[in-house]
Length: 296
Image 1 (cartoon, rainbow, N blue to C red):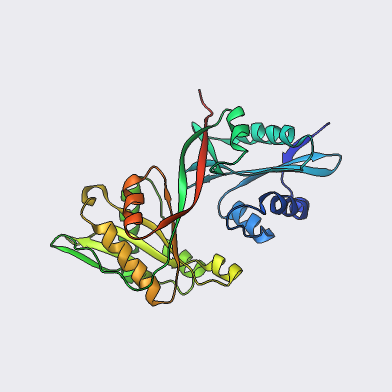
Image 2 (cartoon, rainbow, N blue to C red):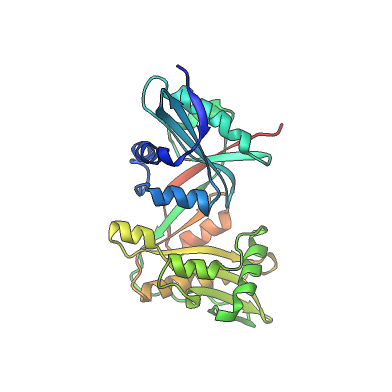
C-alpha cells in the first residue's frame, strides 16, 4: 500500500463529501455534510483538510481547526477496509504537525469504540460536552436577583459592552465586534432583543443569548430554540444572575413559539450543569474530549 498525504483540492470535493457522510451518518443529530459545510469550515473557521490518496483514489480525510475549546481534529474518516486504521493513523500524524500550541483534541461520543484507537495514538479523555434539552409547558418565574441589578434586553448601541462582558466572563476572546450582525444574518429573526443581560452599576455583568436553532429547524422541520453563549463575569457569580437570565431567555423563546430549547455546556462546568438541571434541562447527549500533549 502506497498512500500519499496531501492538501485538499477542489477536485476532491465530491469524494470528500461522500466519505464524510458515510462515516458520520449514524452520529447524534446527523446533518448531511455539503460543499457549503466544507467551504464554511475552510473560509470562516480556518480549517485545514488533508487527503489520503492511493492510485488516484481518495482513501481518507482529516480536518484541523482552532476552535472555541482549542486546537481540534474536527473530522477523521477513511474507507472501511482492512487498512482503515493504518490510513487514519497516517492522517492523524500528519495533521498533528499543524498544531501550534501544547495540546490538540478531538471529540467522540461517550462510549464510542473509537476511543481506544485514540488512546493508542496518545490521547486521553479530558472533559467533555453535554447537549441539554428542555421542553416547556409554560413560562417560568424569574429567580430574585440582588437589589440594584437590572434584568433587561440588550440595546442596539451596546455591542461593545456585550463583547467585553462575554470575553471577561469566559477569560478569553469568545466574541468579537460584529457578532451581532453575524447572528442576525445566520439566525433570522434574531435581533438585540434576543440577548438578555444583567446590568449592575451601569455595566453589563451577565449575558444569556437566545437564538432560533435555524439549521436544525430547516433540516428537520422543527421549531427549536437555542441558548448560548451564556456567562457571568467572575466578581458577580453566585448572585442568581445566570438563573434569572436563563429563565428570561427561555420564556422569550417559548413566547415566540420555540420549543424545545437546547444548549451545550462543558461537563466540568458543574455549577452550570447543576443550574440547568434545576431549570428542567436533561442531558440528551454526551461527547468526550480526547486530548494529547503535542509538546513534551
